[in-house]
Image (tube, rainbow, N blue to C red):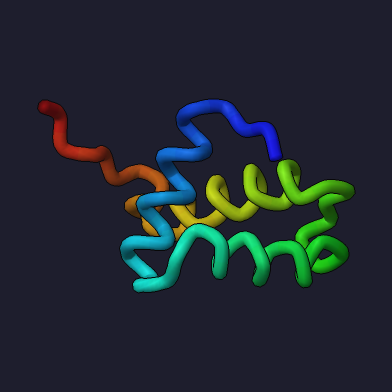
Length: 67
């Protein structure tokens, strides 16, 4: 599976937060390819990582704290 570094980092972070291995998470995603409207596992991972962190983001109109 080919992913950009940012998606690998996101996948590793999600696995850590969910207390599963990256392999377990990928196996789950592979079983949900149709649900995620993705044609490949790489696409499914990208969609999942984006969706996961979008859900965790603050609501529209509320800014993130700046560093």
